[in-house]
Amino acid sequence: MSSTIAYRQYWNAEEYGLYHGAIHATSAVSPLHLLGFLSSPASVTLLIDMIVAILTNAISTLPERLSPLNRLDDFLYLPEVLYVLFFVWLICSGPGKFSVDYWLAGKLLS
Image (cartoon, rainbow, N blue to C red; front, side, top):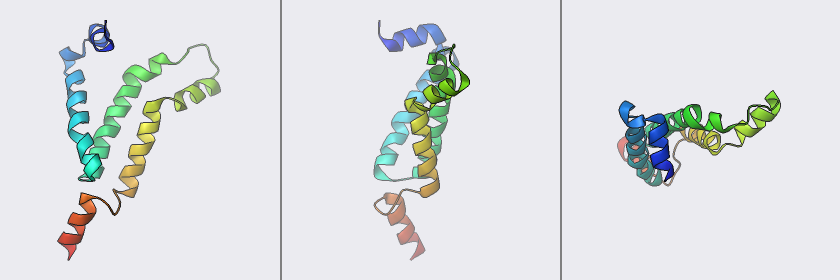
């Protein structure tokens, strides 16, 4: 049984529309990051997606019988937390010089 089927059976995300919404949001916004087009709104969308992934799935994988510091250590090693940090950094710093946003801003301001 694939993990997608097991996930749907346990969570029944289709009933809430969350499963397909996350897939569509991720696949629609990821090319925007590659091009550097609308990178801040794309980062916000993926940031929300990762926060939902942390709250619904990743926290439940942490062991229960650890001290609070060990749980924090395990939490910070989750890949979703690293993605959250990346997206916050992209929102704050912007896309950079080699992006469509930078090119469009130069065209609009001149």
